[in-house]
Image 1 (cartoon, rainbow, N blue to C red):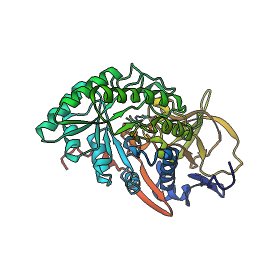
Image 2: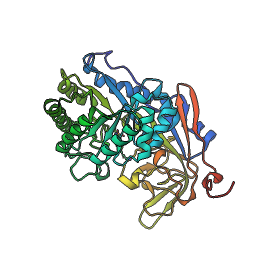
Image 3: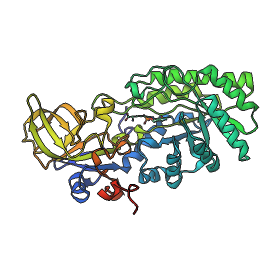
Image 4: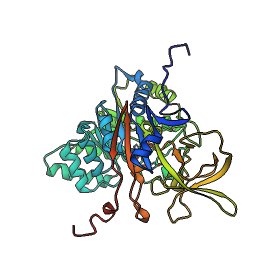
Length: 429
Ligand code: LLP
């Protein structure tokens, strides 16, 4: 690639004077001001990731449009959603609560797709009232419920069927969703029958076809297989039922680089997808979660104790599975580094464990790390997605604070919980 083609992009968390910074802000200073454990997000990085994704699929234009519908579940903090809303991002939501957040953040309803295998009737009603772009329907029974509710409300509900393409994606079994034994979506044959019912129903209108095969996938190939399946469903619906769809939704799941491996080549995926969509008159919806926010966030934690066990050295930190459950729940491998590097501490093999009373409570295992002292800060990387949002109050631990750094501005995006937050709803006051 020629000089000047690659624009230099500042890494989201880089060292200056041996200390990790988020943009222009030192993580040490942020930890001093807001205490630990602390989630820190780099807003500039989030927006840059969105531009990268759009650039990868830019060949689609001008014949088709594309929409980035951010998967709210990855990081639903209002400040993050507001940042994305300001740049015209849509949302992929999976609950009434996520719809509430997305609307509160200023994401227009007509850019919101409502996914989920178990939407309650209240949630369907809320989506109809709000006027969402579409419901990603996952069963014939859900379709019936949606049709009846819409008819009762004098509305016409937009429908996209989520297809289960029976594609295996190389990721953790809990995040592989596109194979036939997964609870998600319906078979291509059943999808066709659902489009038939939509076409006959006065309160339903078919607008798209949807697929989502899993998360943290590093290989474009399964996405292309899935796309071929849903394009087959779209063609058949058009040919046999006269159903004209507006868009195909390829879901999310685009893998990022982490402690276990490299990122997916999103440009290679973009080239192949745009080639397949050319001339079809279909818009494209993408539902990235982790791709936009994953490496834009870190968890800063303080070392409490260093403890030599019978067989291992344990670095005990003030964050654990309650703050970041990915290592213990999915075997997630997050890079961990000292916030301040002094070049003197001997490197040792350690387990980094939290304070929770569970043997499965760890942030990293068998990691080489300069042996920290109590009071040192560690940075757990790639924690912007599925980090705080999966945090819990287990062991009656208040959840941490979140800050967003954007340019030279720092926003306390969520204050640290206090003990009285823990008993809210359990007392009369
Ligand atoms: N669309 C749908 C319908 C989804 O279910 C998901 C994620 C996404 C998009 C966004 O996927 P992403 O681009 O973030 O990979 N908690 C797990 C990941 C669960 C993903 C659930 N669905 C983890 O921490 O690895």
